[in-house]
Length: 312
Image 1: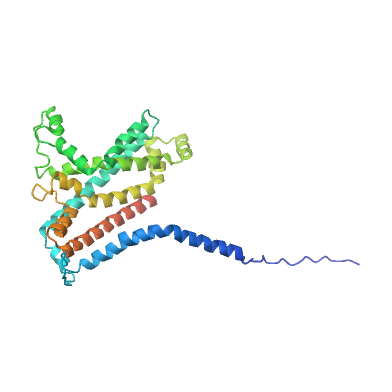
Image 2 (image 1 turned 135 degrees about the vertical axis):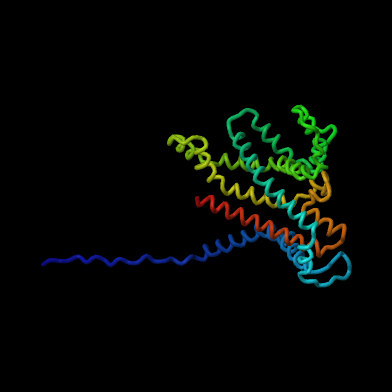
């Protein structure tokens, strides 16, 4: 008599419902997360969200620090597009950003690559490049006013060694804005260098060594290994640079006050004059809204360029 052993049927794995303790733990973690986020959310709500809403509303009025105001709709915006001073200040700000941002990023990255090598006095060089960033802009502007001084300035003194005639840097319409660009590039290098240096030190040494063993030269290792690795940092530096260049004011105000004529008049200076000198707060709010839109466009273009670079 033969007996056949029947195999037990395979049972499907049972799903164990989370216990009460685990659910309590998840809820406590969620509450802790919101508690940690609360200060940042409160700060953003008070100092970002509410002011942005207020600016949007005021841009549709003729409010001028008085007790009365009237709803004017989009008339402030239509007036802006006929305002010659606004056109000039917007163009100067955009031109300033287009020149300063890529040049300062390229120089800062080159300096960071140099400081990433095994050199003596690395701490000294880091400090030296970062000092202009933490120095008050008024002090920086005062130093550069002396450098650009037509009679006894360092710039003309240096150029005279090569036979060049002295230049009126900040008084000449052709050189006033480029002179300010030089100062803006110099002052913003420190922060970018420190950020790039931290990113370069985070690049995988194994990947760099593997590329070197495969015969890649320095340029090929930079393009194929280093550059993709620091992509997110590049985008962060780009965003902060866009916001910083569009907010330039104190440097221009101290060095040229928008002159000669209106050759160095920037957008924030035009907003300042309309809001606090001419007391046209609604008009200045409309300018601020347009500035936010332009900044958003620049950030969007930077994002698209970063995606295109990653896909390539």
